[in-house]
Image 1 (cartoon, rainbow, N blue to C red):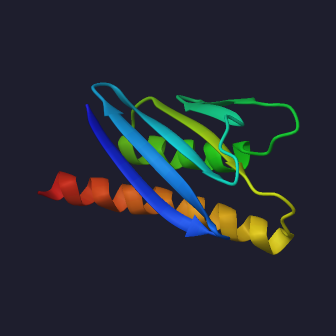
Image 2 (tube, rainbow, N blue to C red):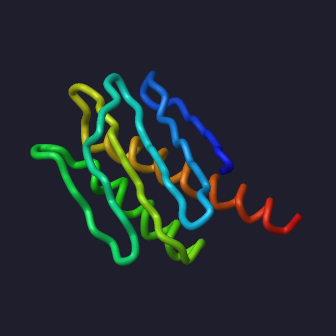
Length: 116
């Protein structure tokens, strides 16, 4: 099993992506903000999500799961939990952009490792 961790600071708190490459599949945990938690779990084969009541972490987990599934063509799970207090629409955009950036960064890293 290979494990990869990436991190980016957003609005004063880290957002972390932890990836475990399995023999058959990939598991990704995306957490951050001022209180990490489990807000949504998404699988991709096809995409299905379990969402905690009053949470919106599926916005991150569903997009990430689909991207990883399209790239790796294997079973994917993405668990997401990012929380910030009192955020604006612009802050939410910065948070989701950062999470998506970490996903893209991981894809580039995996592509580079596959090319070598």
